[in-house]
Every structure is written in C-alpha cells, then in structure tokens.
Image 1 (cartoon, one colour):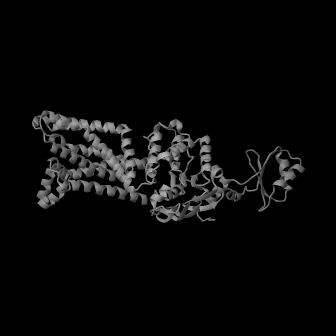
Image 2: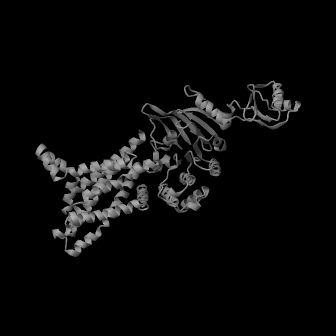
Image 3: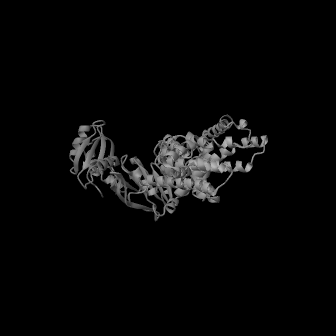
Length: 313
Length: 244
C-alpha cells in the first residue's frame, strides 16, 4: 500500500508538487498522467525516498519513508526515470549486485534471478556490458532490477519509454501479471497505456491532482462519450437522416474524411435511434461506432482548462 | 556492514572494468619511479632508504588522487544512478563508506605495486624496513585523507572537472600549510604559535613525521580524523542535495 499525505516539494519559489494526497491499495495499478514537468517524477522520487519532501509525507506498506527508510525501501521496487544503471557492468553483474544489496541468498536468489531474467527476456544479453545495449534492453535491465526481490510495492517511472511497440506490449503484460497482489504506480504520457494497464488514473498538472478516477470514468467526461460516429457513402443523405433523430444535440463532420460524429443531448443514448434512422432512409454506411470517450481529449481539457483555476474532483 | 561490503565490491570491480584503473596505475608507477630516480637522486644519495621515493608522494597524490575521487559521486549524479543507489535498502553511511573504501583499496593496490623499489633497495643495501613500512602506512593514510576530501567535493557537483579542480585546490592548500617556505613566511608575520597551528593542519607535517619511522598516535589520529570529518561532510552534502 502507498499513501501520501499533503506531499509537497518546493524549490525556492517554485512549487513542483503541491499538497498531493492519494492512497493506492494492493491490486491497484495507478497511472500517473500529466504533461512534462507536471510533478509526476518528483512525486515518485519522494515516495521512493530519493528526495525529501518540503512538507507532508508518504508511507510505503505502512513504513514512513523518512522515519523508517530502510524498511520502506526493502518492500519497494523502484525504476527511476530513464532507468539508470551502471553502464560498465554486465547485465549479470548488475543483477547480482542488486541481489546482494537486497540480501537475496540461497535457493530464493537463483529462483528470483531466473524469474526476473526470464520475464524480461534478458538471457541473450547477460554477459554484455550494459553500455553496449540498446535503449530497450537498458530499460528492461532496469525493470529486472526493480522486480528482482518480488516487491510488494512497485513504482515505475515511465517503464515503457523508449521501447518499440512489441516491447511495450510485453512490459504491459508483465505489469498486468504482477498486478494482482502488488501495489503499483506507473507514470506515463501514453494514454493508451492507461487503458492497457491501469485500474485508476490520476491526472496531475502544475503539481496538483486534477482528476482521480478509473479510465472509464475519465472517458465518461469526454464530450465524445456516448457519441456515435459513422462514415456514409452519401454525406448529404446521412445528414438528412440524422436530422430526424430527436436526441442529437449536435453534428460534426471531419473535413478530412467526411466522418460524421453525432453528439447526444445530455444523458440520452442515441446509438439505436441513429441506426434506425439510417435504415429507414436507406443510407449506406461503411462503418458505425459508439464512442466510449476520448482520453486524449479529456486529458487536454483537464490539463489545459485548469491552467489557472482548480478543477478538483 | 554487508551493505558497505556490497557497495565496496561493486565499486572496486568497476575500477578494473574500465581503462581508468590501468591508466592510473601505470602513470602512478611511472611518475613515482621518475621522481625517485631523477628528482630524488636515489642512486646519488648513496643511502639504503626510500626517502627519495616517499618525499614526492604528497605531490604525486595532489593530482592523481583527485582524478580517482572526482568520479565517486559526480558520475553517479550525472548518469542518474545515484537515484538507484539511494533508493536501495542501504544507509547513506554504507554508501559513502563503501565507495570511499573501494577508492582507497584501489590506491592501496597501486601503492603496493611499487614493491620493486623496495626489493631494489633491499638488494642494494640493508635498509631499515621498519621505517619503510611506516612510510608506506603514512603514505596510504595520506592518500585516504586526500580521497575523503575528494569524496566530499565530488558529492557537491555533477561535474567531474569541477570536482577535480576543487579537490586539487583544497589539497594544495593543506600541503602548502606544511611547506617550510610558507611556514617561515607565516612565522615572520604572525609568530611561532600561529605557524605551529597551521603546520599542525598540514598533510606534509604528519606524513613527514610518520615517514621518519615514528608511528605517533597523534599523526594517526590526525589522518583518521581528517578522513572521518570529510566523509561525514560527504554524507551531509548528499543529504542537503536530497532536501534541496
């Protein structure tokens, strides 16, 4: 479990993190979203015990990160931003070093090293110096180090940054497979990642929490939520058909591909009605989609709209 | 304790997995040899001792030890590994001490590799090996003090060149404080008491007295204190950066 209380970090006059409080329970994967410089990494650094907060505090599995740092760090696996590791060491030496520091020994040591190496597919590069590895491999070495002691709590700062799409998918699968009994925080600026791995998302900007909700709740805030998009062979005919649906509040047409999006009046559902109207008018439709909501649009609205004023939930 | 040893082993190994270690050792051996034979007139003195060898150690260390110590923390800060290191379950002390010990052990290895000169002098005559042993000990302690200063200054910056220059300057002042020319000038201006106090702070004074073969507790305490204080300062600097 991770809990922060009014966690604050100031650099002179600049407030990087402004009284952030949240609580993550085992089994939850919390996604930290926010523009660059929003305070995501600073928050994670404080929870991991690398930076001391100006005020407020954080506990990891019940241990206060400032008063019981060793206990907290023992149950914590942390991947810093950029996945730093000692470049002159080989992958095996690096993993052995982490195992030594973590006090892994005997059968469990072999078991944990084998497991981490296998999960991140590092078998082929074990004897290579880390400096000679590609960016993707370096990140996976860092991840292997973070999960080596099978920590109860994981904090991963941009775990998929610099990976190719296949590797991204593998890391997401890895996170999902560990999610059941662990408390996990990841930061990302990839919105599709929130869908793929997070059970909950916190959007921060300017050091403040602007939204704290599940991914689908966030989507529900989108103006595209419950909207219907379609591409018709005859644009004019489709527009006429849609005009007959009473619950449509507005219609937008994408000038590039002539895709029509119909927005419902608040609280109404129009999907069935749109389908019926199109059929009644014999409009040929190439595709028809009920939109769940667009996270990128929600993200933009929240982070830009709240530049000045607060928009807490 | 095991945390310190883990850090120590990693650090020491990392010296030898880059060319830095070999370049350092070769240059150390070449320079110490050159100083001994050309500047120290090892043969011309006609004495079976290693004074010509040890006299130049403070000046040799002045440039070579900061070259070792500059990377101790500055490099970790630059590459970001400091974030990894300080979020592992070890105390700040274990990290500071483990790194220092590794650097010290590395210099001890370089120093030990000067053994041919000890063999040479034993072949040529019959020197007082007790004095030679004391001098080696003094030299190693002095290197430790240089290193501890370098550790602190390396912790205060992410730039290795800055760390190097600052360390050289501070070590140079601490050496000068024991140099007769400087001490005479101070004595003339401020009197004997001040001159004694200043010379008591200098590496040179304490190293010279150990290399006479007299292992005085005060000299040992001086170097141990010097190392302790600067390592403590290292931890304070890192802590300050953490809260900054």
